[in-house]
Length: 200
Image (cartoon, rainbow, N blue to C red; front, side, top):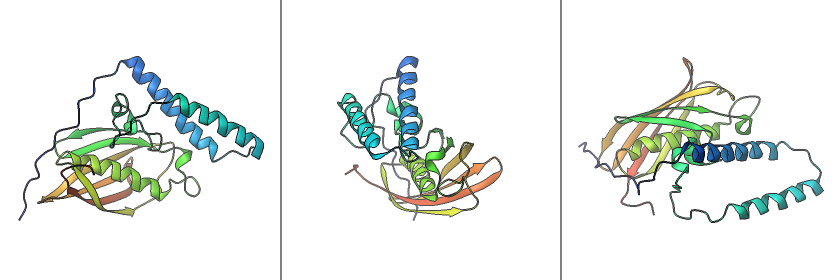
């Protein structure tokens, strides 16, 4: 028997940020992503690495205080690509009825072999995207996620990612999605999310 899961309202409403606020936050986010890319590519000697580590830790102290609750929803982060996380590739998406469509660009920080995106990053992006689709139906957690890699996923190219609710059975929310480079299918995924009462 198929039933509809009641939609859960969002967490506390977050006020709109000014364009200057968002621009500054985006610049910090982009710089942090560039830092991650350069850290794993650097050939600096050990002494300089240690010196840089100390400088970065000093910058970390300047970022305090931080949001400690989960899921993280800072005033600006929720309005930035990838929820403002430097670990997620920049992804802008919009919701429709029971579906979402977004655009995502992977960088050299996401490379696996050659110039193709590491398959693990695709899993993260699909979990993020399909989780957002499922959340439109109910507060939920990922039960399983399956990916089929259909072709190499390029870096430095704006890709389209889509997701939609396939069906709902009680607390189970089945979601499907695909990642496209123009008309070429890079990957597709299906997942099961289970509705929960709270995040814990």
